[in-house]
Length: 365
Image (cartoon, one colour):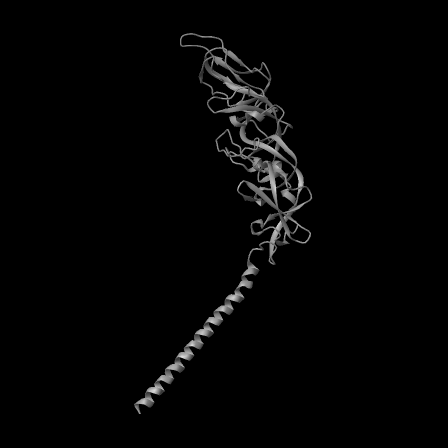
């Protein structure tokens, strides 16, 4: 009887072991099945690789030859081209002023009187004459003010002919010359650009501020502009032309080399090594490796490889943000803050913030 029970117990254990082994085999088979099925699914969402079957959505543009305009951004003060301070002939007290701020005067006109008397004495009143024709551009001194022959009573200026006096950092003096064109703007008229031209360049650099002074005259008279206004100036220095241009952030960098992806007729891409030229405000010249008329990828390039398949989702994006360096510089002239500016000088990126003297930046690849 005991032998029968022992034999029955052993048979039960064998059945349990067989069932457990079958369960393990089933689990292993399911795991292998899931693993083998996951690879194709992963490939669908992955990178194209080298001519794989996946498709990458990108944006493109057609390359064109464009001119980039290098510039320096700075600030300046608007003033009369011809202004003269008025000084009395004798010391004494101001007893009468017949003009006020904004009054128009002629050369030689009497605009007030000085009483040179001292206690216990009497002298004839001394007239104050306007040295030039123009307008009173500073508030005259009040009656009763004691003055000397070195005290400025007021200032007369020609408000119809204005100029901008600005300072340019020392590192940009090599490109300064008479005749350079500029776009200027004032806070009173946002979005309005006033054209100006450099008429004078200082022969020396200020040893304290390390800047060189320039004077610009407006190309057209505009009565919206007043003496005393603060001006933002974008001074165009050099033109970089003759090469195709594309956004610099659409390039792929590997070490010291740069690459761009061109689009083929079969919706695949080719990776091209390029040589860069000058760069202004996010646009860069391509000196070699690409030519006008080729279509390049400008967004989505980081997911591409040589031979990748693409889907162009540009939907009418224009080529190379056609505004170019000048239009972007104009925008900065309209919206830039005091002491802030962006530009390029001989392709050198610097970046600068600085009060009245403004600043500039740019990049050379």
